[in-house]
Length: 92
Image 1 (cartoon, rainbow, N blue to C red):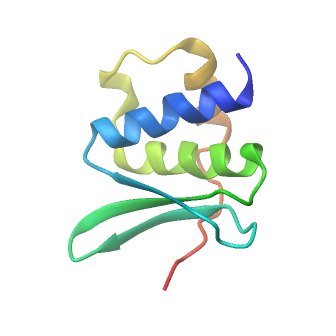
Image 2 (cartoon, rainbow, N blue to C red):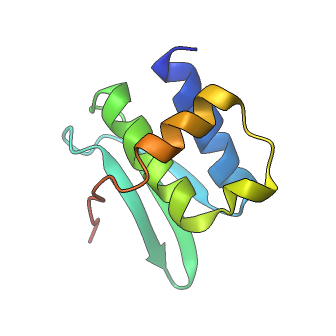
């Protein structure tokens, strides 16, 4: 499974768990998770490498979703576990 497909799976997990996904050009920073008025929003930087956005989305999934209660493809689960502590870029 390539990183683009992993990213798509991770974004789908976030969206299924109530997170709004925003694809925005953010200068290559990668984006990240933020909360606005009590709602979670994940910003995916369209100018950043797929690997970086995937790592940030994996970290967001690890933070917000109990992955033990979901079926997640083994490659995606491994990616989440590997990138669970990726640094978030805070959008202000």
